[in-house]
Length: 293
Image 1: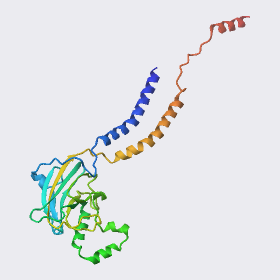
Image 2 (image 1 turned 45 degrees about the vertical axis):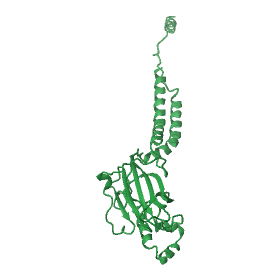
Image 3 (image 1 turned 90 degrees about the horizontal axis):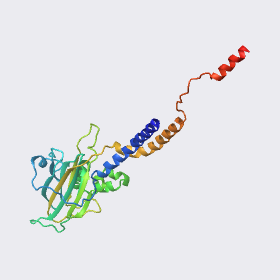
Image 4 (image 1 turned 90 degrees about the vertical axis):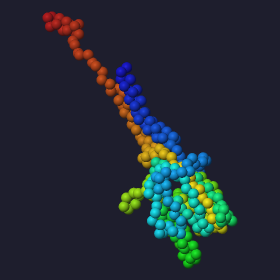
């Protein structure tokens, strides 16, 4: 009976060691907040920033960005409110350092400026990384140079992404809108030849006719912009969990048959105690009678 209990306990431990990691990581994935391209809720952000929040963002007009050495001093870890005006045929970006472990919800509202009301109050909104912001700025500076874009159009389509700007993850582009909400979470802080670092991201409010065929033309006037950034901490699941989830099922298909085979072969190999041999009294007395006769 003791042997059967030990076998059942061993089987329970083996099953638990296989099932528990998969269930645990699946529960983490289901319970963690999911970043999506659209957010259904509104940003709950106070209208007054503290000193740290104010130094976590920086406004960069597209015309002066090449000579502008200012930038965000701190990583963005708290809610931020900012409002500004974008001139006609121009663009302004909110630069910030987004870091892993947080989910950022953006609420952008665009209204007409009363001093110079635009013909078209809608605008284009893009979230992009610093290399794409540099290409965006270069495209703005050379927008009247037809020879540059003619040479660019001669490049093969598969090579144009190396020289043209793209929105973050190819999806965070919201064009022809007056109000937009979206959320994003950063997976890693990036890397480079000289080590990793905090990547600067740019929330661009576009008021000119850029090269994207889906964009809105110049507004024809100034627009007022209000940006709310709601920052929330989120559960950051380690990257190796994906490998565990994918590899656990094949691993279980290998380990379980081995355990079953080992237990099957061990059956019948139990140690059976054998009584010591002894001579039977009947045979012993019979042998003595034969000797005397």
